[in-house]
Length: 489
Image (cartoon, rainbow, N blue to C red; front, side):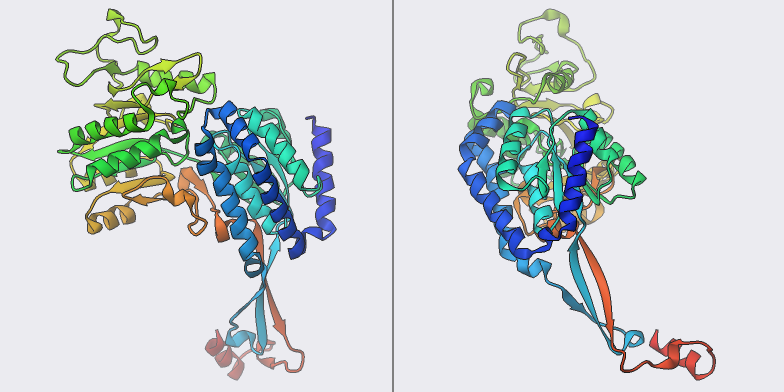
């Protein structure tokens, strides 16, 4: 879409917001209920689009996207009256006699830029919060998930007036054109590199921004953990959506003495979930595009292939799946102890474990965003803390231990956006927990009440009576006035 059309849509939404229609609570509820009905009516189409874009099964689509969106709509519909109601605040002696109130009001015209990995959820979840708070909104879906993008267009057009909510599809040039427009709030979900560009462009207009980014989220397994449960839940978190989740366990730090048991359990659990040949399992997803497939393939190609039980390295060609004696030797990327198979035609990569990883390995330098789990041994919880804190602050952290003291220690000493003790991912699935990053993993938060807060300006107003007007605050000062001012403040 050219810049002129984009500017026309933005101008139309500014006019729509000035009409005051979106500030009416009944109007907002009607919009949310209509959205819920249309999502339910389009559930089969949503599942089909997500299968085309990401290879998701219908069950995974509902569990991780459609169902979570419907829960978000239900929460906002039920709590809208409470969230949008002005409320009192206490006044100090200096403000007496008076009453203080805080008025929630929408920012106005907002922009949501959503990613490709959860293209329905991460477009609609912030949109629901924006609409509930009374804003107009433009949604820019990722061009990497085109089927879901087209579905979002149909869904939004059938639900909202274009002046209220619109979807604008396009590539990076379209995103640039949108960011050159003046918005009252921008909500971005994606990678750190693009997040910096969004923040820089927003700064030109002094536009407030929420950035939901990512990072290398650790899973830390201590020797007193329930290893079977840890392996099952880490496998679930790592392999959901083929590893393409911002809060997926990115790498494993495991205390010495339990690594072999964990590896055996992980292989067993991954095989239970997706079979011995996951590339043929229809419930196992695919990598979004060739560029990301090739990036993940390079991690696999940099590692040796080693199968437990063999005395020598297997000369298995990780790139083609054929035997190739020329690929032996240490390539400083660890060694593959499970998986490694790929299907370039269908963009599929099997669940893969890479052992003997060092901190200097390429796979440890950036977020993996795929079904590859590097394994590093640590000598203690303290060593795990030092390692995580030596890098950027992660979006999530997962701590596996039966020792509540150690769990608290890791929670307090590692800065991260959010996470779980003895589980993965599930903190993301609650409207009662805020979700957001810290440092390089993001800024701001949403979900439930926190989503409403994100798209709301809280206007503070002091109501004073004109019947009395104590002279103490007015000049000239000195004597009793100065004494009273010091007492009141």
